[in-house]
Length: 323
Image (cartoon, rainbow, N blue to C red; front, side, top):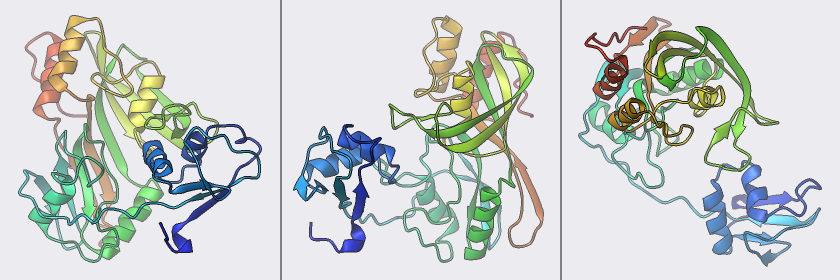
C-alpha cells in the first residue's frame, strides 16, 4: 500500500458528481481502468475518500478529495507460441498478417496467452525496441470476434510512422458485415463516440461528449432478413462499426454485445454458424511509413462467414468475397 506519490491519482469531486456512487464517478472519469477493477481496488482499500477507506456505494460531496492507488500490473512473461498465423507481407520494419476470429490481439485479463502477440513472437521474433512489453508492435487492433487483416510494427521508425498514419486517419480500411434488415443502398453514420453511460463495457454514439466517429456504408447484397454491407472507416474507434450499425437499427448478426437474438430460424442458424459478430476486416491500405511504398491488402472472409452468407442467400451461388 505504501506506494510512492507518483503512483497515486488524486481527484476532486465536482458539483455535478456530488451525491453519485463513488464507483460510477471513477468509471466516468475514464481513468483507463474498468469499473470492475476500480471496484476491486475499493474493496482492497486502494481508494480513499478524505483519507478514509470507503465502499463502492459511498456518495462523496462536492470538494471531497479521492485518492486512488492502482495495483501494480501483473508481471507476465510473453512467450512465443506456435499458433497458426497467415503472414501476407513482411520486411525489417513491419508485417501484415491475417488475424483469425476468436484470437485476442494482446494479453489481457483472462487471456494471458494464445494471443496474436504470442503468435507474432513465434513467427516474426521480437520487434526492435517497443516500450509496451505486453503489446510489442501493436499499433491497432481488431476485436477478438472480428477476423481480418492487420499491420504490426517491427521497428521503432515503423511504429512511430504507423501510429501517426492511424492518428491522422490516413489508412484505407474496409470491412464486410452481415447486418440485420435491409438498410438504404448507401449512407454515412456520423456521431460522437464514448463509453456507454450505464454499461461501461460498451460504447455508444449517443453520448454528450466523445470523439468523432464516421462510418461509410454501402449495401452489397440483400439477403434473407439481412444484408451484406461494405463499411469503410473514416475514423477507427473501439467497436465503431458494431455501435454505428446497431444504433442505426441494423445490428450485426451474432454480435453478443450490441445485437439481439432473432426469432427467424434462418437468422438464428446463421448466428450459430458464426458464433461471433459477422464482421471481417477485408481490406487494409497505407503508405509504408519508412519507404513510402503504397501497400494494399485484401483477404477473403473466413469459412464461417461464407457459410453464414450462403445460408442467408438460400441458393447454391458461390460466396463472392470481393468488395
